[in-house]
Image 1 (cartoon, rainbow, N blue to C red):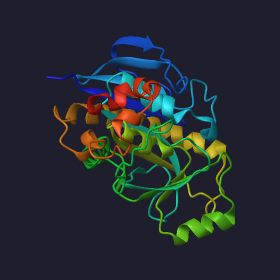
Image 2 (cartoon, one colour; image 1 turned 135 degrees about the vertical axis):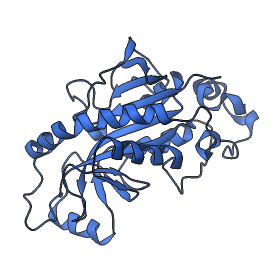
Image 3 (cartoon, rainbow, N blue to C red; image 1 turned 45 degrees about the vertical axis):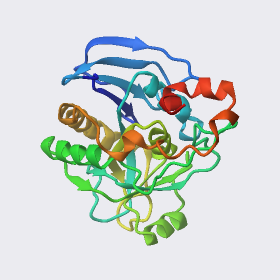
Amino acid sequence: MAEKVVGVIGGSGLYEMEGLEEVQTVSLTTPFGNPSDSFIVGNLGGAKVAFLPRHGRGHRIQPSSLNFRANIYGMKMLGAQWIIGVSAVGSMKESIHPGDMIIPNQFIDLTKGRPNTFFDNGIVCHIAFADPVCPVLGQILIQAGQEAWATVHKDGTYLCIEGPQFSTRAESMLYRTWGVDVIGMTNLPEAKLAREAEICYATIAFATDYDCWHEEAEDVSIGEVLRILAQSTKTAKSAIRIAVERLPEKRECLCATALKHALITAKRYIPEKTKKDLEPILGKYL
């Protein structure tokens, strides 16, 4: 039976994972460049866990400069079947309070100019992305969050903006009319690339503020964000430990075969270099 391999991408506030056994530091180079940092790989709860600090150790890389393709490709190279993306977000609803955990099941992408596909350079592939979060992983994270004593909001929409600036007040008010639940800067194109790589993906998001729409709460500030994150990081780690133990031995969700009918380009026209570069992702279909 194949080993369970779980990727964890830590966002603001989550830069390491305690409790890993037989720890190794793995540095990778991909056809798309270097990931944000070295991967920390170890055993946790009967699975191999590959941890990557999204912004690099010391939080050196801003959202727009992240090499999302290298990060997800690196996870694929390590054999990841699941990725848990941990993120700080702003709450866009009164009912989602700072410190609450949200497991969104939808995304809206307002990013600009971020490479969001592995499939260029002579190959075209169109994946289904109507339901961008793995339903199996999402449900496991909901239960894990509840068992870690978090206030958990299941489902909802994550609006991903470019950043690195926070929203203007006018933008925040506009986004509220769209009915979104939280706002962040990093989970897209992460989720898109994970689906292209046939990796199950879901987000653990922690609300740190009310963006700037709330009339009574203070406008978002990095100081308050960091204070809330310090409180939430322990909860996130506990939820991840619980979730890793609950993951199934065999994946039967659609994420695992997302590319099966998605390749459009005739195989004979795909450049050999592209085939080589994408072998970890597309090799079984070529």
